[in-house]
Image 1 (spheres, rainbow, N blue to C red):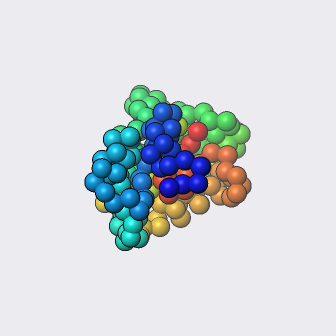
Image 2 (cartoon, one colour; image 1 turned 90 degrees about the horizontal axis):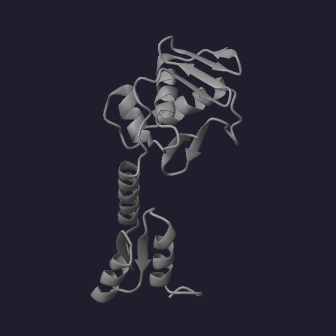
Length: 177
């Protein structure tokens, strides 16, 4: 019931090229419509009227699954240095330099940066980052990762609006490309 094409056609076209999650939010409540949508490639199907909190929970679930099952392989463990566009980080000495100038990082900041480098090219969620670096279960409303990323960006002399190294993928997590 979209202006240019129906949702089923749109879902089919998206699925031809992309693997990211699709949640259909529709007024079509018949079982055949639900079955058709899911068969064409939708990952979830929600009918109107809907509970906004349930929608948020379903979006988070789809993102969590997408990240978990589409994560790239981490760099092999024997790697002890990374060089990314002027950023040089050494695991054994716990040193980080930007264009030859040493950046003074706390152990937590270093571990965050190292973990992101190990997963270069993949998006790492706040939950995964927190659990890997702090070794504790992530709490849903925890801003610890965000605060540490902000301080780390300052030390890497990254412009807040266009960071060169640590990119935010809104609603998903962080990445180093």
